[in-house]
Image: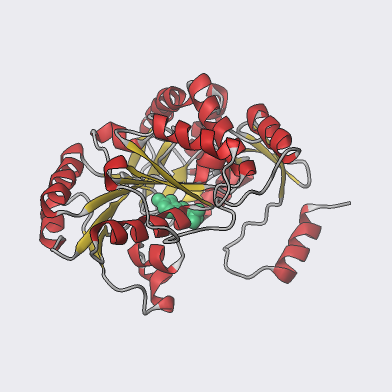
Length: 389
Ligand SMILES: Cc1ncc(COP(=O)(O)O)c(C=O)c1O
């Protein structure tokens, strides 16, 4: 029989070692619940690091994958494809403003890489200004925009031309943008950085600064996109239309998928300037189309807004001296503790709730947007217990 122990033993014998693993072997999921190999059930507030916005095994995603798998799985972008064509049009229709040119790839980091390359091509400049506490991925370009030293230092020298300024500080950004700046790259809510928001006035100042100085504004919505924050895109909360939008995580419904969407006015990339073997494959496109359709049909962004308020209200009502601050937008929630978060994650896991860290002291919740109200209450109760209300 395959048990948690036997799976762990095999994986430990072969794993790269790159991941700080928890001793849980997940083998099945349904909605906001997952089960381990020993049959133990959990409420999943990790959701594949914010991937499973529609929950696990949503019937629309399962059907789309099954149907497309029996038709055509791979098709390079040098040929046209029905699923890809429809997805591109649907992405252009659901993203803000006149964002409508699409490059499809396979991950968040790949979307950020592509956005940086596109910005360099469109502007003829090389500089990128990113922000402190930003997380944009692990590949060398995306890592150069990521702030955390422990991710960066072992791999230096990184890509040239990147600087970091304090987040939510328009003055600092104004001082950092030069005639060599191709792009300003920001998250609307810093996810890995601790669930921290910038103010609307900050993002609008960034928009003005970029317009005045000929730099492009890239918004990384890999984690915040597709309903997570209670709107389709977090930039809608702050009245911002970026020049280039990066998407990943939830877009493929669990199938690897990333996208860069940019303003029509920027034009298209030169022939052969960028590419990705798996990018825009029909299987991932069919899954993504089902994600977009289901988000709209089931009103999941609105549901995230409503349940997010309930979750935040429950957490804010806790009288736990350990809690420094509760922050959140929709179903993207961070509880900043006065102590390191790891033991509390472990205690939650023992009570059947899976949650994430965001830095050393923030407990992060990214539940599927389909999570039930009872499960939201159960999560609040479990957190109250472990934080010793
Ligand atoms: C805001 C943001 N950008 C980029 C990435 C990188 O995405 P991926 O892990 O798919 O490469 C992440 C991953 O957590 C993210 O949160």
